[in-house]
Length: 459
Image (tube, rainbow, N blue to C red; front, side, top):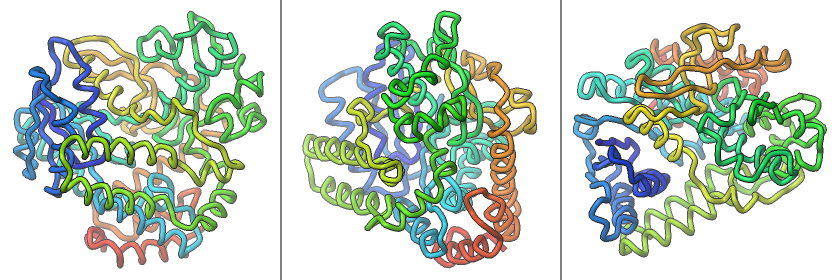
């Protein structure tokens, strides 16, 4: 099978290739086409992949291209992991947010909306190119904000688009590992997530979901976790939110809900930080690609590993600082997640191996108060026919209003991009729960439009 990876010069590409190398199935990927608009970044990734492949004769062939149609032509699967404006764009979003006094996280609130408004025209062009050039291909969307980009891409490609995120499955595995530590479930239970042997009751939107149940051998063990503060604070989300708040909620939120539940603390932590996360990553990545340019394949690979480790250690640093300061668990520093979910999708669709995965898909009737064509993040059964949402518990009352509002914001962002409407963009910003008013929404959008030429289409 052939895989096209858009954003092929991106930092996470070696994680995907490493996972492909470990695949020994008969229908494994035989060719990977890396597409990027930056030849220097493509070259750096080509060196690292060459070192990963070594002398293995069965390693997927790597083809580099700056032409989108060439990249997707003949592909069975297309991974899209683009970032319009690059990491520098994220840093600029965060600076704008600081200037107007709002949270600047890259996928939530102002940062997510600005990111989406830049990325949607490109994402739609990608979908149209796939429809014209590789109509049988499946688009697996990594691009953030994943819910918005997936929903917009569906207007062109329909059910052949699946959005993925590693946050929900990571949350579930960490929670189950805590239960293993407490002797509530047997060792190895966390490794059974995704096989259908462990059923996850999780629902919401991308970066806005709640784990409401963990069924192991027919029994929901989440109540056992919630009743034990020591077990709750044995894993990252428990320490981030605090056992008392999780017991109040009666479920475990996705880590990104920290921006909603602790907005004031995060705003203060962001303001106190010397640099925002985006500035840090922009500097780190610039240094990495600069050094990799003249490095050998082995040196580039070693440099990438060191940079990756540092990146993981500082993930969501301001959130952890706002929660009182805490280090990440060692197992959470072994990055990866997207790649394993993507491989499971390819095996399920390409080889008919059934899997249960939490994906961004068409709602249908899964979350009853949302439109049927809205994209939601829920457990799905995946096989050769694609992905079908599984039944989930109704969202608790405290979540319904938040999900309804944020979904309206997401759909308004898509309309703004499709219609080129500045006023719709203002509406989306002003109605987001993390942006306190129309005035600041207009200020932020004006600064973004001045900063990003990609937003010149908004009139």
